[in-house]
Length: 381
Image 1 (cartoon, rainbow, N blue to C red):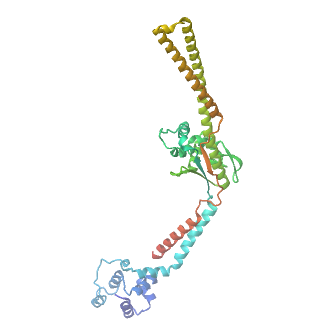
Image 2 (image 1 turned 180 degrees about the vertical axis):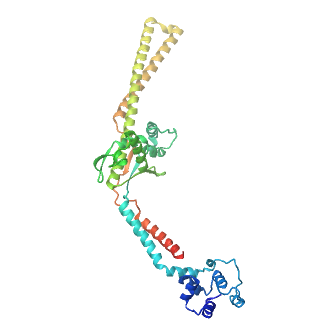
Image 3 (image 1 turned 90 degrees about the vertical axis):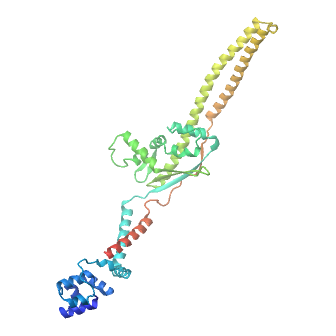
């Protein structure tokens, strides 16, 4: 049945011909009637409804519908075409426009009033003489509780040292100036309870602070050049830059302290060995002297000559060992007082101008797309 046949039927049967009156009679919306008009076709379920209500036994009407009476009625949505969808969208363009606008305003209101901006400051360091510093770096890592193979590449150690709990624990003892929390505030406070009360013990706070610090530190490496980039995220730009600066200083101090400690241990060991070698050398020299006093004509006896050469050889070995230890002792003393840098700062920490979070533009664009999609769905429903 098409719309013309429907209008003729209701005009002859009930004396009504306006579409609005027909829609009320069939208990359907005017929008549905307009949809039938655009397709010039009445859904099967409406045709069946008319048949049952008005002309169930009228064979002429049944033939005029050109559709057999079928209790299994197909859904009206089977006949929705692309033009129908465009018609729906055009009729509901206000909904499609207003919905994304509302979502964009809501997300802007939330981001600007209820979220804190996050700033990121970064710095770059480059290893100093990396081919000669692998053992030192491995020693630092071992001191921090990191097991490093003997053939490990130095580039693999930096992130583990920077993000180690030992270095994080030393950072928690520092104090920083903050616009929000005041000047000279403990870093542990900024990372944990802030301005609130301390609801847990100091040990728990330190564990929480170490975990928070490790999460806020980002370390990246350039495999080809060996340059290491360190970045810190904080709620204030000056605070983020200061944290990076202090972190680099602590890394440098820790390495120098480790090198000095190793040099001191080496110097003490050599010093003890020199004392022992001096005693052995003196004993060997006394043995040589006694042999010469007791055996003035040892050259005439092969056995005495062999014994003499054995004692003399022992004296020469102790003498060479003593000279070597004295040289190493002087080198250890020099190394103990010199400052050996494991890295150089390539780029100092910068003070960021713009926050990296929240990404307002991205959030607004995503909400706009979501709003359009939601508006279309609402319009189609």
